[in-house]
Image (cartoon, rainbow, N blue to C red; front, side, top):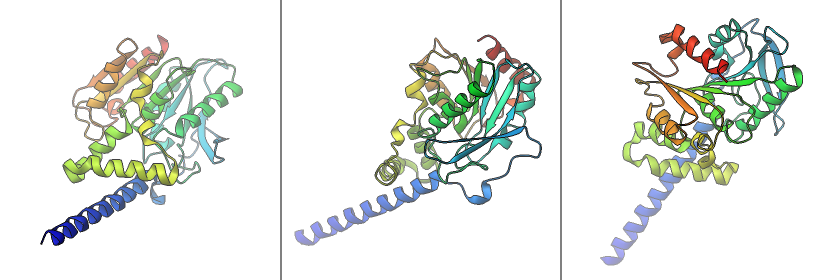
Length: 288
């Protein structure tokens, strides 16, 4: 009887580990890629097309809107997951009418940029630095700012640590760390077992793709950043809860200010409170 119980327990354990491993692998693969049907071309006549090459050889493409003055300030505008530079079409006119040039790229694995994977900042931070290099080499100005939404906000914050060349950044609906948002999203589907499958997915990514997702963490960078950071978050955001912004703000209160949008949903500030959005964002950049 005892032997049968031991065998049964071993079978349960092996089955559970296999289920967790398979579930983690599927979770990882789904998190790294967009369906091809989600990838779209930029809007017609949306700035000047530009292209650079990432460190791993993939083409990165974007739209360039020069500033009014040759040495005018420029904002690098980063979209969210599942979106493309199209998502910045409402932000670009706001910045342009206030004298800012804008560079709006498609993130890797999105839009018409190359790559079949996106990594929530692990590779994208280097992509951001290469876009900053392009701005500096192609134009006379030296004042570069960053504006990101959702995943783009998280990537931007990861690129705002020591040595960054941004003078100030605005991040709307950012995630504090990929682990934190992954546990929240998976937890919405499977509840308290979320950490088990998330850690399995992290291990799968590490072993198969050499991706250390524990390092995809804006929180690790903002705590040591000297850059002025404006965080924007809606209280009704169920995609990335406002708790992420609260955690980030607490890490560096001397450098971070927060605009809480009452009743605002995910990246909804510019549509819910357009006049205040423009006023706050432009004032933040001009003050720095």
